[in-house]
Length: 454
Image 1 (tube, rainbow, N blue to C red):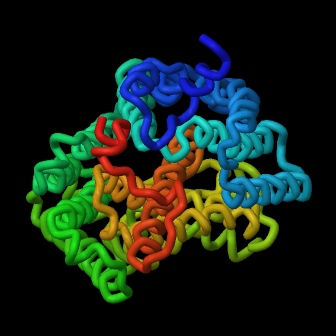
Image 2 (image 1 turned 180 degrees about the vertical axis):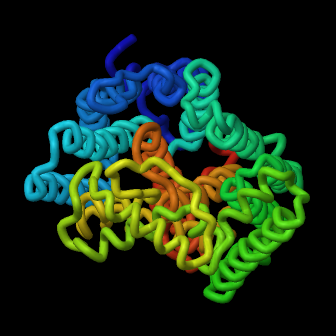
């Protein structure tokens, strides 16, 4: 194979490739790598921290990908997340030097950020604006997480196999089924599938993922509705955006109340009832389920600019958290935090560790997710269910989930999907206003784009 042909196989094809080029690309090395990276999550190296062989593959491929992208004249990697991530890394380095963090702590903290940036750069060059490769990577996540659970389960997965084991890969698999051409052509099947997995998650006690699926089902319904009635909702407006946001807020509120009633009455089983009772308090179930928020806010209040360092340690914050929980009427369940400052949020964790400069990336990502979700009703193609699910899951993780481990690979994927969706939404808006649409904003048409119709 010639060097020029190799570049075609590795990178995304032109918008309207010939059938033969599509056939060659289906066997391309780039496609295999896109699927293999998340599928090989089970291969790990444990040194001072947890390192994935997939990350080493991406770092090794990055120089080659940059060289190939330069030769092919492809557009550059988005600069904003790289710049904000670099600011985070510099802030973390300065904080660790200032605080005198131990090597085992700052080496993990710096590597956590550096690998995130390298993974994003490499995956963006591999996936770019190609929806086919986004789906390939997502299927790789399904395979990788299931293999990790069955072959190397964590203690959390052993104690709660659904929540910490199979829930995310199975849910993502259902969402991906909703993006297939035949399923999406049946207007009400995609939202029904996602609603079904929402009920399953709720029955299994995974409240947050159930709520995310419930709202994503609504987005899928909007997409199916618009697919049939494009002339009615295909034009953006402030009123429609506000209405969608209000509907999502109402759905989330209704879901919370429904869960509270069902759990409190024992309809979801004794375990769910006990869990709800232990997490019910004056500040709501979210704080009851994520009490680390209180400790993080106390730590941020004490050092908002500089932070406390990588894997920040100070036992007083766990003690303060327990005292606040008791004051607000929560049942305190003993948990071994050790000396670590309790953290359970991408955003607050970065703020605690690196100071306010560590939050810029997460505030930008949070804004990206909200901006995409607020206008997702304009998008009428098969990627809408995946974009809705990824957007909602990512917003939740930024606010309420710890960062690290496999999320160094998941976060770049989430960003790529949201950036792709944002560009398509911009194209819809520009087209509705009679403005020219750039190549990256073009909405693929199945009849013209074999890759989109595959």
